[in-house]
Length: 167
Image (cartoon, rainbow, N blue to C red):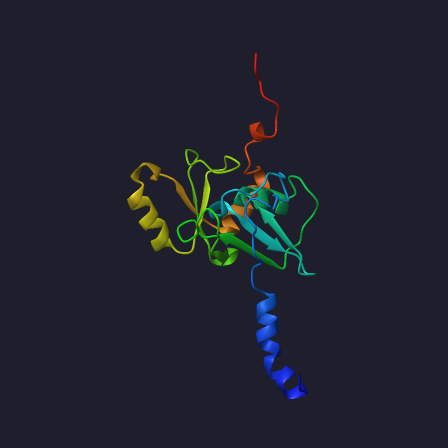
């Protein structure tokens, strides 16, 4: 490769390095709870400054790890969430966390019981709620609001990690 060609392609190479990494559903394990990621619509990922991707089966797992509720410390360079409306069970459509619209409703079933869904826009969320009117009445949050709220209490319900209370 000629020097001029390399220099001209450098911005594109850097942009490619900043893109989200591919998720292998059914293979990757959550970096927080260690569950195998089986539904890409709920997935999240953080990329550290060295470029290593960490995957999560629920946005709550990533929020809790970033807030120090468990797992090793993580200071991400990039954070992405799967757009629930545009993703499939096997392929996420990644969106940067800073622009995400989070919807929280405790009755929504998610992998870790957080009730958090991520959407690329408010319009996508409203379209989802029109299709599923029983999910109305929840709270709309930004990524920054969810992080701030997660400082006070973990998003993953405590009973998820505690042993069963069978008689």
